[in-house]
Length: 174
Image (cartoon, rainbow, N blue to C red; front, side):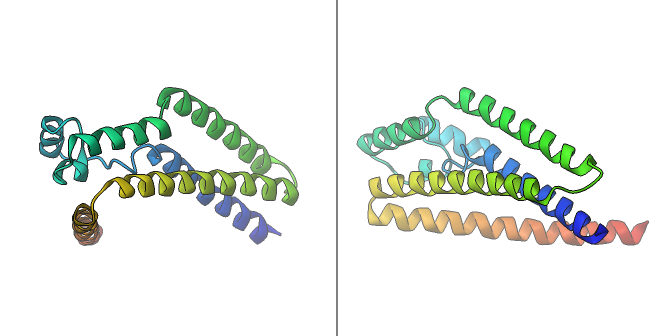
């Protein structure tokens, strides 16, 4: 019974962590955070940031992409407030389940289903936005975008590997 309880608590914690990260990043996944240099370059080209600033977009393409982003993320502040309230409510429900003398598996399943539905919806919205933007780009621009994404992923992998080596050195030094 204890293993089941601990497994359920760990699973719920993982779901909450993934959902929190997903909801925090939902508005930024289609326009990744970039260095100050890329941001400045993007501002010179009409306000596009990240990899978009490196695609030599026409004014028409920029306007279309801005319209897509505005449609998908119109009132970001209201969305953030709503998501924050939802996360707080889910956290309270999880705490109540965790602190109960017996585990209500049906309630845990309902809460997990709610979290999964939220994560699924955010994923769908992100893919829809990326698809709509992709349709605005030329074949060459899409290829360059994929190249930029691959380069960014490789840098992330290298950073992760460097970080693991650094952490290992620190543990050995202790």
